[in-house]
Length: 353
Ligand code: IPM
Ligand code: MG
Image 1: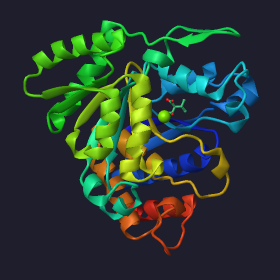
Image 2 (image 1 turned 180 degrees about the horizontal axis):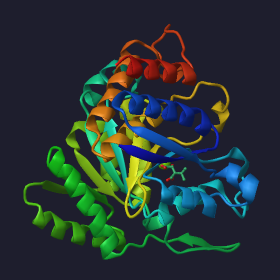
Image 3 (image 1 turned 90 degrees about the vertical axis):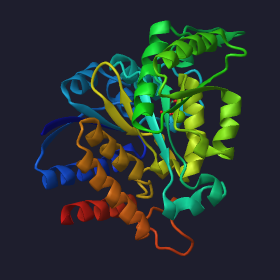
């Protein structure tokens, strides 16, 4: 296969983990005889500095030309405590999602047996937890009408039937390939937008009698997720709810640095870690590259290249078993490996075949 990849390293630790993702991608392509080409583009705070726009038109065009986007992270502390900044790096992320039509964000939550100790939750609660959170990504509170003056401000959570229906269909498709169980997470006791979700979900559920569908309020889901994570198979939910729940879910796996995601929809699919740009770690070679590397596995799998994805997953598991780990997941007394050392070990493992 011939793959054209748009690479968007972004800000903070982004460029460091991006490099590891690209190296792993190239190693897999060499091993399986695929050709791959990369086109780099700017985004986020770096792009604001260079051209005043966190998602420049040229970057958009680069993404549109590619088969897939390998994205890393956006964000810069210069903007975090400045609510008056007219342009913010995160707007680049939102523009990217919106313009590429990436309405479905797939966030798999899994545990690694060798990392159970790393979760703040008890081993027997998290062991074998394995679910997918499908977060609606181009609607809801993030994109609804906004207003702000000195005295008053609001965001709105707006959804159309079509937006709800298409994300639900993604969820049911995933469930059919997994354990046939969808949990629709909303706040239908309070929010009318959630009532629309529930109504549409009930209709789609009826068309899918082979799938067990249940409905859960988001507050209850937040509790259930850490009380009994094995209950879940596929969760589907609104943009903001999904943002919050997936950070919480990362505690099941043990580190934000381990969770990849795929965003799909109308145009070029995009693969990225769920974590942010961790500016404090920038340049220190301590960021965990595994979330980025696993997002490369998701990229291959998206194109039906499951053996390629599996090789990456095997290499990641082997690195964990061998204790080749970045500091935040290392066992007490274990040696610390940097971003580049973990990446190089995995590339070597893949290349040795
Ligand atoms: C995520 C991130 C982003 C979001 C931020 C960086 C804008 O938290 O992808 O979950 O809120 O969507
Ligand atoms: Mg988030």
